[in-house]
Length: 116
Length: 112
Image (cartoon, rainbow over all chains, first blue to last red; front, side, top):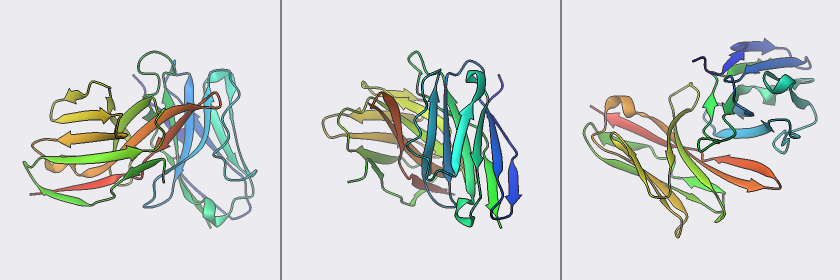
């Protein structure tokens, strides 16, 4: 079946502009996660959605970052007034959310964001 | 102490060798555990879940030691294609949310 997809695959933007990153999770997966990864670094958790529950936003680094998930499916991560330190690969993952394999995450290919 | 700790390596091993990585975690209430592999400039891919009784998938064996709070990954008969960074992942529930913590990874280089 189709995996997690993300768009765009690459985004170059000027400092101060807003960007929107999109994630389409695996159909039927109720949990969705956003991470970012700077070159040579580990994954940094950003936000987690589970079903219709309020999201866990504890990883968002500043109020310039926000995310929403519409209809329990597609998610958009928005970064306002981008800064150079926002340059990273933004990864989305989904997991079934229920059953024995509830927390097995499947990642999309990521969006490489470069802020100039 | 970090929530999840891994030796960053690199582990340089010859083809055919057996290699093992450990990953320690600090929260004794952690509930589920996983190993992922990540190739250079690619997304992480689930390698295997780690079950309490230990589990094996081909050349890969994962084990959980709750008493000492670590998980391990054993790779037998290493292949060149096993070269990657191996990430351990620990899940626990906190404040009603599932909290996922990734280790920073152990780099494996299999040498011809």
